[in-house]
Length: 350
Ligand code: COA
Image 1 (cartoon, protein in one colour):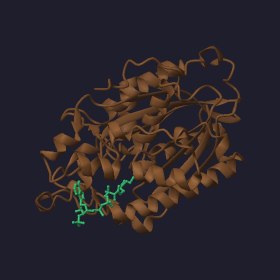
Image 2 (image 1 turned 90 degrees about the vertical axis):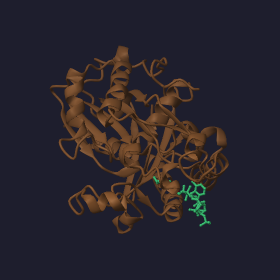
Image 3 (image 1 turned 120 degrees about the horizontal axis):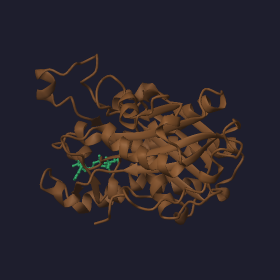
Image 4 (image 1 turned 30 degrees about the vertical axis):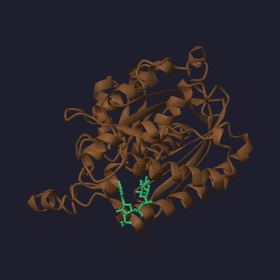
């Protein structure tokens, strides 16, 4: 079994020496540290074979997923986010007390309110930071990046912790074979700072609310609070029209990546690594082929973690950094698609 990402050596620690020199430069928002964390418990395809009418062969061939991590009953989003944040802050040489803001992208907050970002702020002791959550489904991390970049460029903060975290197992129906095979739990974090060195070069975000009901959780909000009827209909869990989602995901991620490349004025050949949202290997392959990326330039870890929603891109980013697939000065392309629908892409110099 692969070890969790915890305790693996970091590679993005070369900014430590520069930390004081970049304080007053506000031209770019730059990622100076990444971290990630996943729960220890592995749920394999063969485990799922015992729970629903499915097979390892079906799941592997339709999705590329072999296993995923599942949080225990006492673990919430802030617990996993905290571990990812701690690592990212350590790599960035930024103490929690020096954070100006914390933004958490999630659809599985600890509570309806307060925000998971506020709970995390307390766990970290980040007294100076303002903290808020942002909901954009599986695009959550790209939305947090974009918002953090805007805040930094406007002078509203110098150092921001952004997190993508989801504990989807808590809203997954383990009697529904069409969804329970896809999702997993995890968190990924990045520390952003104002810098005179190029960082986020472009970012494109889009939404189309007309299709909100193709991927959603019907109950638990103000429209349908949880009650006996909800529990009977299992409407507290994710409902998805997988086929429809698949088609829109491919088209949207393709258009967002092209727009992000154009906005950054770079071509696909300039990109060192494409780190897409890890939803389904067939989606990744379809997008890769449409963009004409060679296979070795696409990072995939969904075989180990499944679709971890807002955590997927930063979890993949951190793993790519740790594996030496991304080095200082590399150009990385992110793309994501999720419930809403929401989607986006970013070109980032690391
Ligand atoms: N095991 C075995 N059979 C399954 C199954 C499972 N886990 N889930 C569905 N099936 C069956 C269906 O019942 C259907 O059977 P039928 O033909 O007898 O009706 C058949 O497999 C095909 O179902 P379909 O939904 O058309 O499969 P698909 O090729 O579209 O794959 C998904 C399903 C969910 C893997 C795929 O649509 C997908 O990945 N969609 C995108 C989901 C996503 O990424 N969501 C998050 C966005 S961020």
